[in-house]
Image 1: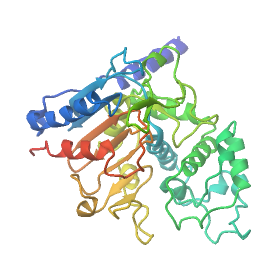
Image 2 (image 1 turned 45 degrees about the vertical axis):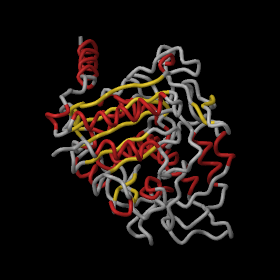
Image 3 (image 1 turned 60 degrees about the vertical axis):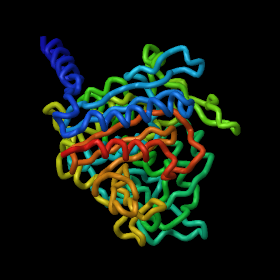
Image 4 (image 1 turned 180 degrees about the vertical axis):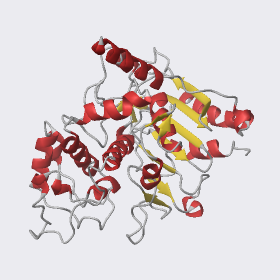
Length: 396
């Protein structure tokens, strides 16, 4: 009987976490419907003229869905319309999930952000710079999440079969910079943070995220591997050839993005699932009455952790700092687009994007599967125009 009650409770909890996001008419949430239609028309036209194979956009204001649509096709052959519940590689949007998981362990008193990483991963105790000298600064957990760890790039890491081997290979490589002295947008810090989660929790990273993040938030279609019945919803990845035409790009087909569990770029998700995570952040760590993170932890996550650097920004405009797992808007004028100070979010390599605006009580998720020819932050990226079209629709 005790086992049966436990099973029923687990099912009830899972069902409660998966309750649909509430919906509302845009005008009731301070959004002009005719102006919001500009966003929808833009995405319809850019997909229609062949810039992208398909797109899904989801917008929430005050915790209510005010716009959620899909355009285009799921497959290269354009036989299957793209559905709102299509599954995408979210790439670097994984970093915010990993950061939230680390903060959960901090809330339990199991780590501090400025703890040495070597306290949890002894293999990284003897890191060296390129000149063979030990770094002056100690590598910390905070630096892993803020992308200031000082790691360099090395192709040998990408074929590591698991996280244990990943950190062993990493330990043999020289640091590219003193920890904490330079921002570098890469995968390594968040991957190592995933190994820290494993070392402290005693769970594999996928199991920890499923238990502590995905299940409580009702993120049923998010994970490192897709089940066979989910793969029919996986959106195809495209790029653009020399003639400007869409062309198929390599895809993971629902398997792991890398052989190891990748806390930087490894997750698949849907617009709805990721919106649930983003709405949790907007509401101070709570969704559907369930507290996943504390309010003060979310505040810490969305602070600029580059404030000690000169300049304290990561982007080409000097407008955005970086928090734990995402960018933080510091200067609207330099940024040159509509938004809010303190707005938090990030983009993935396949053109996915999310934003969390606590000032405007706004969440937006854009799902594409396109490998752009431009670098991250370039104004040609679709998220820039989407952001402007979203914010111009606000009436109050």
